[in-house]
Length: 474
Image (cartoon, rainbow, N blue to C red; front, side, top):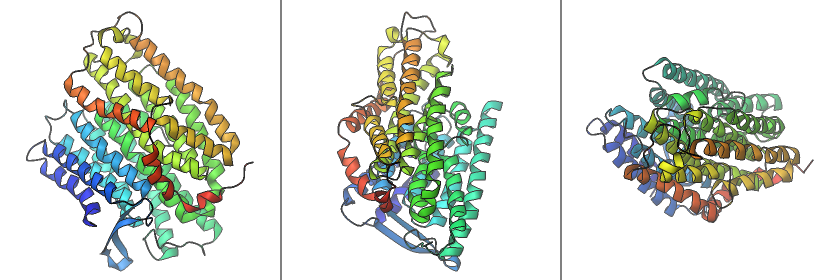
């Protein structure tokens, strides 16, 4: 069944090319990819080898680069997230489907993201890491100065990060003589060079994630892009950055990761607090949600570099839960914005009285964002904080205190927009098509919140082995 992993990315790629025949080919390809992802999940043995369903073929023999794909528990959960969210996003793009290029770019991005998750050749990963910027650039860009500026800023930030990573990748190859992540051994590398190589990879992933202070492209891009494209970027593509931190920064560079961990955790805590504080001050609904993502990515990075099994398992589960909750919150907010042509908070009031279903979905998604117990993000955030406290109490305490801020920005937003008497423009309630793409997201938030065990059973054996050797509490 080794063909399954190749089919995972090849089907959406073919779908992107075939969308020229009919725009609904993209949706059919995305649904087919979801079916294949489910088959991969059934084939995966959480108690088996670390990388499974491995396929290897020669690619560039002169430098020993290969097409190698394989899947572990971390990659599997992110592949399932990607495969499940893309059909939802395609159903949510009804305003853009008169242009065939739009759904084609979405499934093309899906193909690249999935292949980046399953690639076991670092050069192949790098090529995809950079190539996925092109369809995203066109998804973000469009008519108007704001969209052009946001698309260019997104591209320049991420290209610069990618160039730094390329220099580090050359250094890794010069030391190891291979791009196969399973065979790379940097044990004999000088400590200074090892730290420099780690910093090159980490910088690129911090930009992609994004982590403060290289985060400023995200709010502009999220607001300028059409909502489904913004969700694709925040809920799926940005996970390539945090995935890279686990797959490459922790597993390839060993002691260098431990050396930089205190600094990175400090930046993560700043991201958590900064993102929440700036979100509280926003008047634009979509920009507010974009800043909440910066705060949540801080939790993910904190869990990764706390170096405990609980924190890293929680960080991986947080990637999945953040993807679902952000998709639900941003898409329902986008429905409200499309209904009225407005997105400034003071323009609204009393929406719950005229659109109760819309208000209900927004409330559930918002409560998930602030990690209410019983909804998906709670258990992942709890694992991150507990695991971090075991090894680094001070960052855990600071991050826990910042949770109050998330309650402020979500509940205040809901109160101003949905509470009180109707004062803003007329708002129609959700119709059937909108319920169709929002209902699976709400169901996933509840199911993952009540019973996260299947996901954790797959994730936990895949966390980096040295995580169990985390430093003692300070």
